[in-house]
Length: 200
Image 1: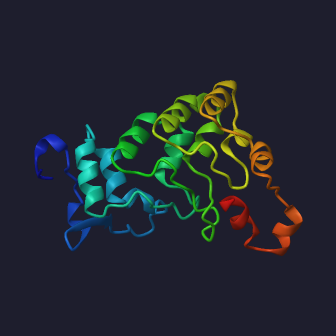
Image 2: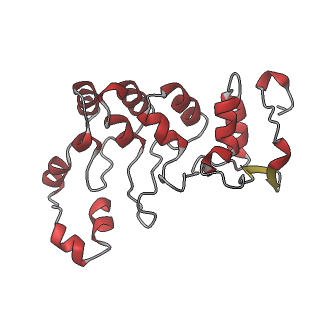
């Protein structure tokens, strides 16, 4: 496989800016005053700009260190979270099948291991049920807890049905099933309480 093969459309005017470390393609250099740093991630640049993005190229880049976990500094989202919210299921499928984590999290709380996943974004809008269906089919955790679950936040009957059919539960149902309960007062007293609760 060669990136120079024209059939892969891997041609960028700023290829010279790609950082190479131990033959790994990591990120493109940050453009001065560019508010969307994530756009400069090589793997997203390829997906968004190639005429016909190829999953083989995506896997090639992933195997050499290209990262999907590149978050916008203002929103703490990756492009994949925007795609989930905007119903771009084709791009999501391409990225996930190319090696992206189907449970990719935001960085709303950088210190936490339990931030909202792509599924939370998908179910937040009734019309994005096709993204919800895709994520579930590709193995998304329908009971990821933050301490709310995707079903707690789901909008629209189709999103809710897709989640329930996949075994999703509300946080209250999970609490009852595992005999654990969220204590907001304890959370205020103990900064690590939410992490402990989510791990349960």
